[in-house]
Image 1 (cartoon, rainbow, N blue to C red):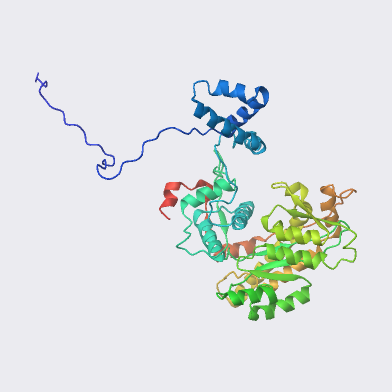
Image 2: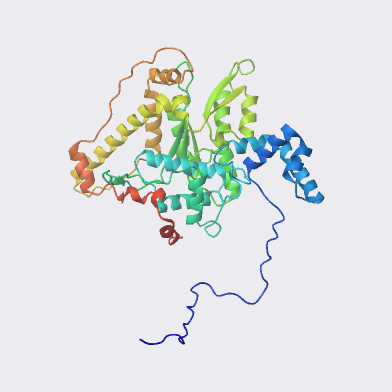
Length: 447
């Protein structure tokens, strides 16, 4: 047996970053200041109110110097002055262990209104059964950033921002497919960026008022032209306005244009002016307008203008529109059913046309005039009983809920087969590609 007593074992080289021997060293921590969480501060405030400041300091600063005792006294007095804020933070499980907090929107790149619109878009896509991938959210976010005046160099929508966006807006971090469930493949069409916003308004008597539609339009690069379009042509350019103005008059609605087709505070002011400024009983009678908790609905200008019109804005709490908002309770579903019927008829027409001409089927979306015609038509055809049912189900008016019959449109097998054969539906997305299922390491490679 060999003797290994004199054998020198070489020390393994550290695989980490080598030590930097030159330059300024980091300043060592002195541990002079101690920061506590909201729960600890509230307990100290309650203790001071029970036994007094002197007794509290005798217990809390038993081994402290006179200077430290005086500093603690001033600190606790500051806590007592902000007791209401500390109680609100300490009584919530998600913030009780935090040491500081800031308002939503502070420290973010995109405005709060833009993030709310993106959140609504994500929820809308998921509600329709379409997973939102990292690439889809990134493209939509970049488009929104350009609309608010940010360049691609200023805002790149990296995975850090995606993670913060999901945390700020309470998006889940769970996969859509559970154990022992079949994998579902969801298909979506091409033009996913073409969209429109429709604001519905009806009163408790069942009367339906003219629609406010927001369509997508290109924004001019000149600020003077943009301001002129907003003041004179409701956001549209001269050429497009010549098409939009006859549509307004023919369908008796109001049409506005924005680069994203999303609602904003300026349109909220126009909405209030159009519907409530010319009331005969404006000075003597108040009107309650039930609106979703959306930032563009409750800006300072909008709230002040509503008060001048004697309109009371009632805010629907978040995640309670399904029970408090008449439109979500009873109006939206039949409207979507009728719109779907129009779209299916258009699909059948395009299939018949491709068969008659012998050409390959290329699915084309509806034009601007067609969209306006469809939306205003289904709003006009919505029964008065459906309008009243929304108010009754929300317990805003009394009375029994009436039964309203409606047929759900479907595609026949031949038409559906032609659509699938001719690749009318272009992209295929797996549920695991949803943004909640994306691994941060993978998404960082795309940044």
